[in-house]
Length: 117
Image (cartoon, rainbow, N blue to C red):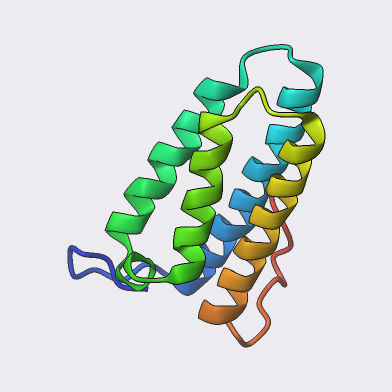
């Protein structure tokens, strides 16, 4: 994938990052369910990371799937006290969108790396 700085990001690294991203979304669930520490700072951090990625990687800048992921994350950040079932639904929707993003940009199947936490 190309960056805005005219450099290439290795496809395998990008696939690993997207698998890692799935793990970051899964992590939202125990944070919200166990309420050991506040969810909002975690969501804000993840939102900043993805906003930066959106500006860094050219292919994502105009990708409607990526925009949906950002929108879902913004919703979660704005409603971090929502019912646990709502949070679960949106987290799994976001994970599904990340998988679709992987399929779009790596149609050869990938996922030989598996999902990373």
